[in-house]
Length: 305
Image (tube, rainbow, N blue to C red; front, top):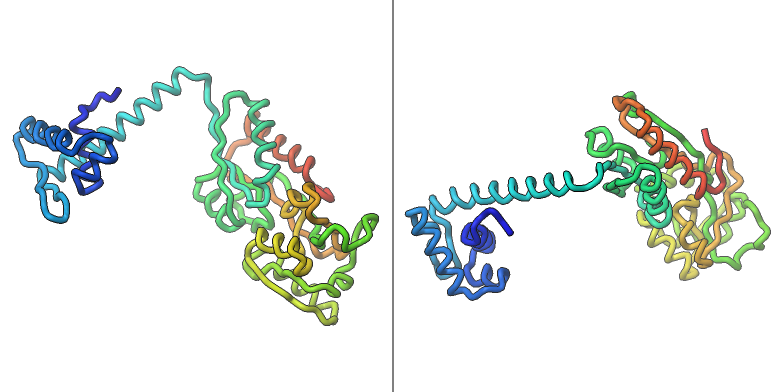
């Protein structure tokens, strides 16, 4: 039940829809009943609030004033309701965590389970995106933590952990001997490549290392989407190069295999970051420790700093 009259709330819907008929459909009442509500409102305020035109309705000057004020009333009422609801609940801890998209399959759900078990009543606002987008959100104080690859050093960012993750060959399970633990980049160039394009962080170093091999190679397709590259490999078009986090879901499902590259320079740095202005409290440290535990659980191969 709302503290605002049904006439006020209906008027807001009419103004938003710019049509009595459309508003009536949305509110599931007859248009004639809605028109009567408008008449009651106009009589109450002593002003004409809307004009009926062939193309719909148009608010009068007084109608515009009421519309803006009614929106504020509704917003304030909703805010008050949320506040009262939260008072009746156990203390709610809210966290804003950003992560690269490849962590969304298994990593982030597991992280939520661990944090919920440790911290109790918790609400986590997850945001996925590329490293630059997440970094900008962190610097703008729109995220509390980010977990992303190759975050640029910045005095405004505190690095709570870095993990070097090998780039590996992504291929169909029967392409290599199942006992093969690693592979040279040069040996990978015998197959058509489904290659990460310049928008993905692995591209520059990977392409540079391929050129250093001074060997012929065939790029069958390029994309800024790891999801698409994965499906190209599954379709048998070629092989690709990714980190374990990018491909963990498909490997666990038996659709693809991941063989780390032997080349030492071909690694991605997975960073755990928070703003440098944040004081590391006991609660903050619990979040950091749990992020590290989940990284250790999914990291392959793991070399932490």
